Image (cartoon, rainbow, N blue to C red; front, side, top):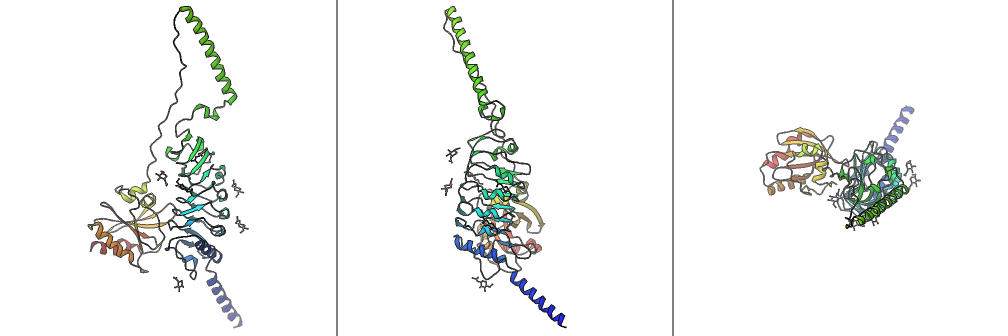
Amino acid sequence: MVLSFSSVILVSVLILSYGVNSEPVQDKQALLTFLSMVKHENRVQWNSSSSACDWVGVECDATRSFVFTLRLPGVGLIGSIPPKTIGLLNRLRVLSLRANRLSGTVPTDFSNLTLLRSLYLQENQFTGSFPSSLTRLIRLVRLDLSSNNFTGPIPVGVNNLTHLTGLFLQNNTFSGSLPAINSDGLDDFDVSNNNLTGSIPYTLSKFPASSFAGNIGLCGAPLRACKPTYRKSSGLSTGAIVAIVLGSVLVALLFLLCLILFLRKQQRRPDKKEKPVTEETRAAPPAEAGTSSSKDDLTGGSIERERNKLVFFESGVYSFDLEDLLRASAEVLGKGSVGTSYKAVLEEGTAVVVKRLKDVAASKREFEMQMEKLGKIKHEKVVPLRAFYYSKDEKLLVYEFMPNGSLSALLHGVARKRVKE
Ligand SMILES: *[C@@H]1O[C@H](CO)[C@@H](O)[C@H](O)[C@H]1NC(C)=O
Ligand SMILES: *[C@@H]1O[C@H](CO)[C@@H](O)[C@H](O)[C@H]1NC(C)=O
Ligand SMILES: *[C@@H]1O[C@H](CO)[C@@H](O)[C@H](O)[C@H]1NC(C)=O
Ligand SMILES: *[C@@H]1O[C@H](CO)[C@@H](O)[C@H](O)[C@H]1NC(C)=O
Ligand SMILES: *[C@@H]1O[C@H](CO)[C@@H](O)[C@H](O)[C@H]1NC(C)=O
Ligand SMILES: *[C@@H]1O[C@H](CO)[C@@H](O)[C@H](O)[C@H]1NC(C)=O
């Protein structure tokens, strides 16, 4: 009796402490501090009385003991990231702060995010040199710093990141020459629209010209060939080159002297002769790389590519445009009477369900009014509609992806009734 009584107590204590601990206390504090110090839009409202694991943009591990992913794309974050906030989430795997107005330098304590796999800081206003803290995050698989105001050289330390499959540094002001970045595992690489100079290392020449475009000083395959004097790898030292040039000039002068003497004898005016100039073969840069197949899967190629025509509803933290959606990797979930549904996973890992409607006769206005109603539905059994797209040829509905959501309801359900009515 005594034994079983104490086991009951033990079990209840365990349950209680599990209940209390099912909350990443330190991570929660770090997140609250972050949000209190950084200006943001109202739709990010983290309620300090509920578990951080249930907040928008936050996901925890299965035991709810630490924050696993933080995704706050396009939520109007303004200013610099204070130290001792996000840098304290040291079990973080995915961090997306893209498309905000974050500025200043990337905090040095990001070097503690050693488990990070994906870091998306693109489309902000970060300044300063390439953050040296990032070359310590050796588990990084995707690193996107594009469309910021980073300056200075790209450090050779990125070779520390041996798991990297995507490195995006375009649309900054990085300068200096490109280091010999190990590209063995690298599938995507982009340094276009920077201020880079010098020759492209052969390790990177397998990438298309579009990866390097917009750097006035960059040369070598896949861009135009470098001028011979820039080609340091040709084996000729500067001294040798100077000697050769001097030698040629001497020979030419000697030749000219002989010529003049000879022509004087002939009593004729000499013609001016020029040494032939060797013109370099200028390879035309190849056309831009092909588009991903998912683009065609999803749209049949018929969408007019107008940006920002996706209409979002206020709830939820989604920020992507049609381009992002078309770039997403997509798989067909099923075909129903109203259309086909796809699961689309955006580059940063956000998963959504895209439903492509067929045979919709509604005008744009009617359609938008129906969507407005659909977007307002809040019911635990109804998968929330987050955005829609309307064009003459294409109507798309974007739903939150719920791993256990009712797919058949999505395929055959509400939308049909409402749209067709
Ligand atoms: C925060 O959560 C608590 C408990 O879940 C709830 O009672 C309260 O209304 C919420 N506050 C806000 C501002 O949503
Ligand atoms: C990283 O974490 C360790 C241990 O948690 C801490 O001592 C150190 O100060 C942190 N480094 C930075 C740069 O914050
Ligand atoms: C960042 O670069 C953009 C465009 O190059 C420029 O308009 C903006 O002023 C820069 N911002 C900062 C903070 O340097
Ligand atoms: C490369 O990673 C190691 C191990 O994390 C670290 O000690 C070193 O400082 C890193 N090098 C650079 C250039 O960041
Ligand atoms: C980079 O800048 C170019 C021109 O300034 C712009 O057309 C392009 O969309 C930008 N790319 C990204 C990824 O922002
Ligand atoms: C580009 O780089 C050169 C040095 O390589 C520097 O002098 C120049 O100011 C840079 N331009 C910009 C716009 O940063």
